[in-house]
Amino acid sequence: MDLANTSSQEGEPKGGVLAHLERLEARSRKKFEEPQGTPAAESALRSKILQLRRLRDQLRAAVERHGARVEASAEPDQALQDSEQALERKREDVKAILQAYRFTGLSGKLTSRGVCVCIQTAFQGNLLDSYFVDLVIQKPLRIHHHSVPVFIPLEEIAAKSLQTDLRHFLFSLCEHLNAYAGRKYQADRLQSDFAAFLAGPLQRNALCNLLSFTYKAEPGGQAFPFCARLLYKDLTVTLPTDVSVTYEGTDTPSPSWEEQRASHEHLLRTKPLHHVFAAFARGEERLELRLAY
Amino acid sequence: MGSMEAEVHVLEAEIAALKLLWEELLAPAKLSAPVQKSFPEICQSDPKEWKSSKDLRSNLGHLESELLFLSTLTDINIISYSKKTKNLTSTEMTEKSIKKVLQRHKLSGNCHMITFQVEFQILEVQNQENLSSVITDLNIIMEPTAYSELSEFVSRAEERRDLFMFFRSLHFFVEWCEYRKRTFKHFKEKYPEAVHLLEGASSSYMGIQSTSQPGFELVIVWRIQVDEEGKVLPKLDLLTKVPQQALELDKKGVIETAPLSFRTLLGVLGIEVAVESLIRLLCIEENH
Image 1 (spheres, rainbow over the protein chains, first blue to last red):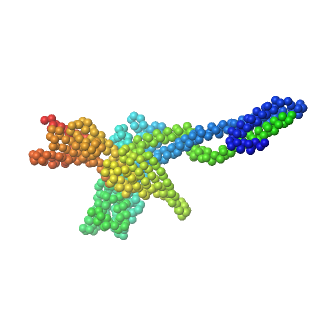
Image 2 (cartoon, one colour):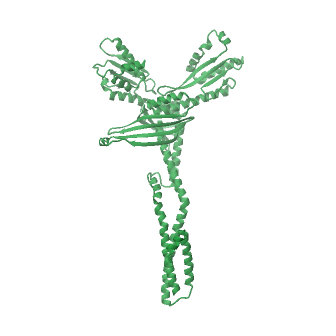
């Protein structure tokens, strides 16, 4: 009798075979109780039977152990795995969203003492430096460490709202840092991209809220007839509040010089510094003048 | 004897069957192996943070509280975020060790009552000296709100590709809106007879009516403007509604100059005190 065939014919291999095994075992027990032949051959056969039974029992135990595991894992294990995968997916989502906060300009990480806030700066699409402020959350709120440059009036901003409105404090600091980064970026770009238009290095203070430079507006010109002084009174802005352009030429200024000077003042007050010089480089000064008024 | 031999055969057959069954049981385990493998693989991607489901849960809990903290801190609630990157590095660039990557980001969320969806591209160029990241394209979609002031500002932020300015100004704008609402509500509660909020506390108008002189009405128009640089500033105006008869009696032109005087008052006293002094002016008149 082919057992393998029997089991597969029954359609339920696991249950069928086990049931069959039980039937066979019951039958073998009955046979064991029946009268036996010669004692020597009998004892040899008996020991063989015992050996086979031990082997069978071991095998059956192994099968049953495995079967139990498979059956148990069929439902709960799958659910556990699903929930773990769901958890994992959720964790990845949360992690991604946390990272996305840097695009708001303000992100942070919880620390054992409080929170370490990261402030990202940019000027018109150019992503610039980022700064951190490590805060100890207790009463009163305390700044533990920070990378804010010394010339940024951090203490003044903190005195205004750190204790009363942390959110306002951080956004105000954001405003200051972004404005500083923006002014510095414009000055850097002017110096790096339009050095040929400048008579010497651009003079600036650390906050980059006072700039002065001697320049020309025509790419081909030999002389540097103008001197500009830009003041940003409000430290949270990237366009100057006061602009003065003076004529430095040796010739007596003609009416056209005066017209140019006035148009430069207007351009510098309303457009980013490097954009003004980009217009000069393209020879668009006149066009800009017409557009400006 | 025959029966014992028979039992040996049976036992041998039984053992053979059990062996077969054993093999059958192992087979599906082999089949499902790749499925099971994928999970440990994910876990192994971050072995320090992940040890068991319990660790995963506590890690997730930590991240979620961090998220809650950040959304409270910034007042900006990011609900979904996705990122796609495209490598634009050509072989020529690789030779010069230049890396060029284009990232596409998409995030949506809300800041109080204002919901937004922001899409932008960041071009990252890394050469030997430095890394430059530039937002090359910025699209901001906002659900139409009662805040018409915002649409102009949004298009300016898009034009300048100034993502941070958008969020910063949005924050300050909402902060001012909340302040205006609180102030209007406060006056409505304090002077329920005189103060009228026809369009609700969230609108930019607040009417002050004299109950004893029905024709007299003042309207405070409190707009919140966002300037070129993204700075948010309140702008308050005073409108007067006075009967023609009273206007004729107003020899000194008090009513005519009221809007201008209100501006001066604002500058000296600040918003709350200036508005309150106007309300009391009408209330005191009522008492006479």
